[in-house]
Image (tube, rainbow, N blue to C red; front, side):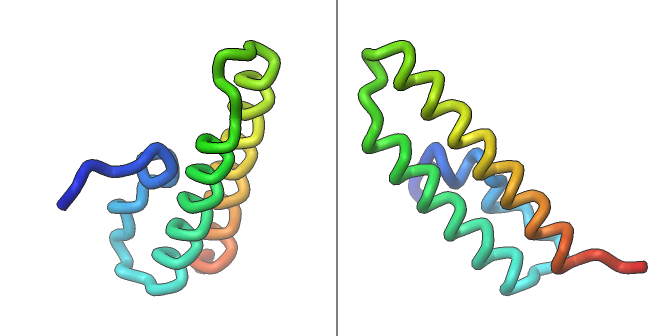
Length: 74
């Protein structure tokens, strides 16, 4: 397997103990979004870098809550 992208690493793409197709899909889509944001940003600008970091952090947070929502057992 090739090296994971920033997005794939950030969402923990390879961690899916339940083998859930829905978890995999959420993680893949969030990884794609992180990669898109990362590619589009001018990282030489410190303000742009900070905004990019905040965007990625919030995508990760949303991904974790989405996975929790679909895997929650009461």
